[in-house]
Length: 203
Image 1: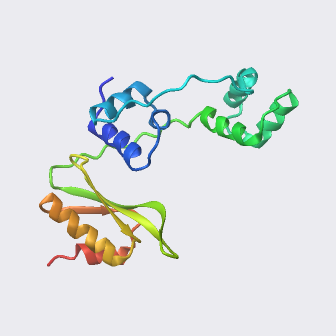
Image 2: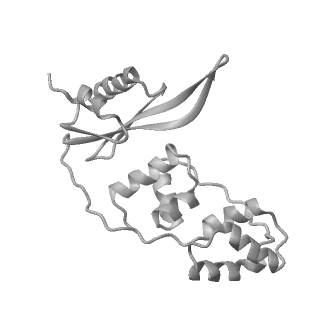
Image 3: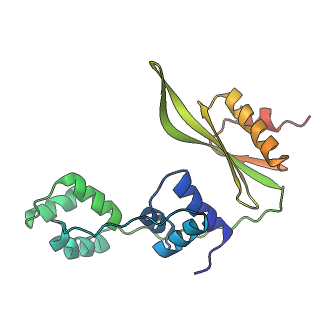
């Protein structure tokens, strides 16, 4: 099916930044896995190798589980595990919880107003966390400075050891240099207001 630029950008972001697999991206965005594979293929990503599915101890109880989740979508995995175990399930709780998370019906998506911008009008800025980076005996947070052009969804990404103000300023300078300028408006997510004032003050 045809997809818009916004959905294509989401698929690429979840693959390259969050490292989600094809099935996870498809289920979270509500699209077919072939759509995700097509977008990734156009971006030069090789198709994931699929292994034959092995039989699971949970297979005989799938009908009961899916029916119960349809009737009671907020039922906890622990309660459902007890119900299935009472019916003869011999597997462990960890694998069971993982499968329930995949099977649980998702809430309907809320309607939203699509924001359309002009070229050079707006950029979105945020930090992404990539765990810890060890240097000698010290551990530092590995952070990615991300600036995305709202019109084209083109992303700029740089990694830093921490989300300090100097790194935030350095990320902006490098982004503006690489992109050949700055957008008229910069939108920030989870960035303290005093930092926004520092970065956006004219002159």
